[in-house]
Image (spheres, one colour):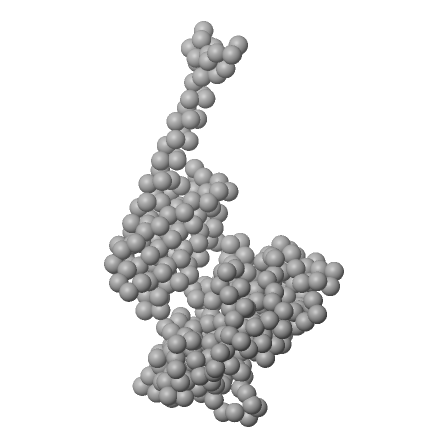
Amino acid sequence: MRTMKADIINGNEPLSKALDAISRTGTAVMVTKNGKYYGLIDDRVIRPNISDSSRTKAISAAVRAPRLTEDMSLEECMRAFMAGHFKSLPIIEKGKIIGAISRADVMNEMVRMGNVPKTSVSALMASPIYTVDEKETMGMARGLMRKLGVHHLAVTRRGRVCGSLSPFDFSMLSLKPKGRQRFALTSEIDNPDEKKVVEYLREKLVTVRASEPLESAARKMARRNVSKLVVLEGGKAVGVLTAIDVMKFMLSLIEEGPTVFISGLPEDDMFYYGDIEESMKSTLKKFMRSFELGDVNIHFKKGKSTYQMSSKLDVEHSNLVVHSEGYDLKTVVNENLDEIKRILKKRKDYKRDKRKHYMTEGFYGGRTESFYERTG
């Protein structure tokens, strides 16, 4: 698989240095501690409550993320990226960072191997696309993003999409004036919400037609080194296609049985990702002959002292949602799986009893006719 040189900084170096690199590459910076890989920083993990990035150590903003090895398969790489929607991940050998792989690299490998499913962009795109005009304020855009529950907005100019806005743009300001050597966080700027969107939008925007083959879209992501495309139909923006959408769809075709997707797992607990995934699959395996099971989406949220777990299952084309909460991750996961098992067993028993009922009884002349009466 195509690899790239990793941007590496020591955890004791200032966060501002990492932010400059992120702005330049659009991917991630790898952070080391005592010469070994510690975690990474990208535009999704920056917290807006940092008062001064030049005085904050990079290691304080780093998150524990999966690590790759040179002999990993394409499927294993996709799973690693799905664990936290990372833009790039490090390749580690004996604790040392020897390179990095971006989501665009994964797209490139999918195209090279001919593994991209034969379908159109419109089948996978997320629609509608949410937009904000470039003349609106950052405060208005922030409120819209919060209201819609989305992480990106497309920015329009005279009705046409011209750029994008993300939490990264809310958390930090671009280098202004040109040549300035450190980022200024929004907390250092007077009334940042009154600034215009046009001042902070990123214009690196790549489009694709809704009717184009998915392979063409994946090739475009790889060639332009981007992880999302704005989908056009009749010249108008109608949706968004992301690298995560493509990976998720491809994994669903590779796997036997339901595909399990996990998000929100705290960095310190990322080690348990595979165990949780396998435990869920093992639980559902017992019911695969009884029900048509679709994808499973698991989301974690960690509070000050508790874990929350929400599992959403596609059972016979309807959603089954199970919540659990507790002080220990293992207990929360087990309680969630036990509740899923209980509900599915109850449904299975009901389905079996209902089938028995129709096998032994029929309807004749408006009244129930027993099996004995029918056979005489």
